[in-house]
Image (cartoon, rainbow, N blue to C red; front, side):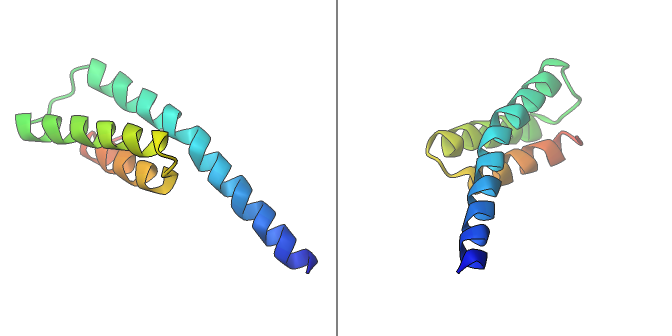
Length: 79
């Protein structure tokens, strides 16, 4: 029973860590965009959409989806 509670506590801690990292990822993407990276218009639009999706997921409490979208944006920005 103790292992079950420990596992649940670790799961909650992991979720909380993701929840708090979303804003940091968004700030990093914003900073990179502010430096005017060389991207095609299509890629720039995709990055901005992924960034917006990440923020929307974060606000909805869907932190795994948020981190996925923000990770895709970072990959396009080569971060």
